[in-house]
Length: 170
Image (cartoon, rainbow, N blue to C red; front, side):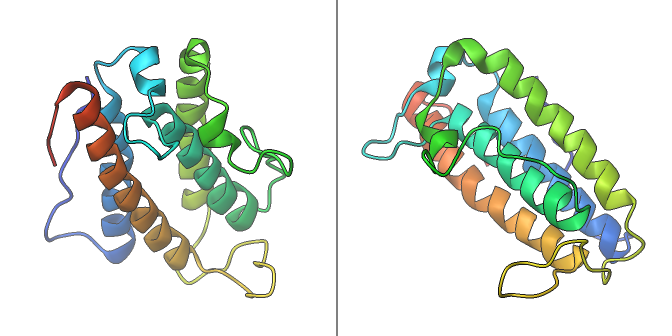
């Protein structure tokens, strides 16, 4: 069972506040998956969307790897679940039998991303790689974007979960 910790309303500097909100949203996505079978997690419960809870886990693994490992840290982190031939593979090529491995990859990715974030001196520091045609990206921008990305997809997760077993919650 996942335990979410509400971000404090006061007492943190900006970076710690961003960290706490990002962790809250990471935990929310996992919480939305708690208690379901791999088959339920792979279910596309809101047709015609191809989204599933497992697809969201895979997608957020890719998003974390992109922003924190590729852009911020400059690591070579090739896609795990999509390709040029299958750009929506994170959502479209779901196999419930791989759930344990994919959750392990999600948690391993989070650990590596936390390390990459902690290694950067300040929120104003730019990542090692510039975005094509967009220039440098600061850690502040990446963290705010990741909070936004999780918040949006956690809304999707709410709908998916409710359709699967009726569970609701913030």
